Length: 398
Image (cartoon, rainbow, N blue to C red):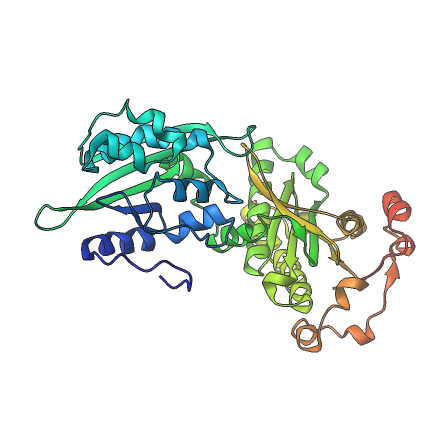
């Protein structure tokens, strides 16, 4: 528990041990005492409510009381709708009723008005643990929210009921969740949360694409070509992540990446990371060729590197996938630069190179003061789209 804003452990020693275990294992979880007052919430559930930041929610209040229900409904991210709250209360209410000394009458006074009509349908329940699925809609009615809920009783060494832990997770089974994230880099997953809110973010942009892919696709079997693309894209993602970048969309055998000044510390660091990622991937392409039983000159990647001072960067999450994307003229310009980089070149714009501070430039063995540039339109490899859309962008090889 290293976060400065992490809630303190409960004063009850039994609950404190459970709270520490839930926190350290990275679970979404609430901990309530025997009267169903919230005594702890893990950082993970608070980050989900807070859109990546630790949301402040009322401790010491009843989990289904007006203070907590009102607070969760106002969260900018992960807010609980009335429908979700009613489903959760209907599922957990039997345990709550069992722990309420005054029975139905007292519980009716404790809970939020939006839940009171459900109280009379509750029956006492004292199982050691119960599981429920909460199905409803979140703030965006187009995106249904399915949550798996698990409540389990916590007793001390004497058998005294200390409280209840309520854990939550996406309703998908762990096999499906693991298949989605098992091979993911946790650093990248965490970095994606930084762009959950789309905003203007200065960043370096990298476009990379396999050159001569059509002849290769025709020559190789479909299965072998698919394996080649998978190896190349995996190498690209690894190069980007290790350099501190965010992987954008994959289009066939091409990839886009963004290197944010805010997460890398400076514009110079972002520009350096972008160039480093391109060089790392270029070197890795030879290994991809070997594993695919091809010659090195048959797996050639071309690069377009550019700077976006006004990029609008954010994550788009739908029911099918989540990806980082960016909008802005510089994105289209980066694609035009990449298309002109025939022969496995890495072409970088003047705007990108001149972001480099002396220390970062020296680390890359570049001297921005002595670089010379060529407008895209004057390159012998310039495409029609480059001449039309970005003829004056000055580039050099890196």
